Image (spheres, helix red, strand yellow):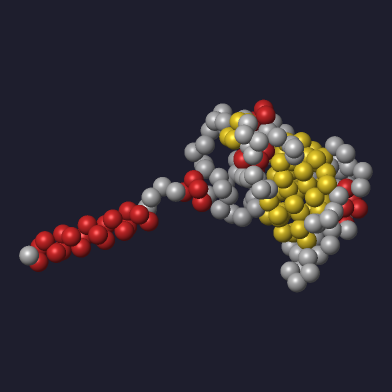
Length: 189
């Protein structure tokens, strides 16, 4: 009788443990390291896209700021980032906006370390206003003015219409009660 109770208890405990080990990692994890870049991914518009078909995104500085369109590069880094924007887009908090070296020409967003993003960095000496790069340590950098900041970068996109970009970045208001600025990104329609 005691053996039977122990067996039943073991089965119940094991089943609870297995529930915790179920493979819902894809649902929670924004990036699946095992995904191949040749695999199609569905955009919010119901279309599949691969590296060569990444949809453009809009970038808005603040809730009421000017909106710009960014065209993604055709590389694995850009694809991985695009795959994680989601149907509703993202509201990215910008905590460091005027207290770091070169803040007068660039703005950056640190992607959480739980994201695994492939990179094929190259040495870049000059950046043009509107260029967007990925750097090691999960950082996305937008240059809103021409710059000469040599480093290892993977280019992920370009904002071609840069008129007003500097003003939009610099005049993006600090969110009241939060102490950070906000950048909204969405798939372009």
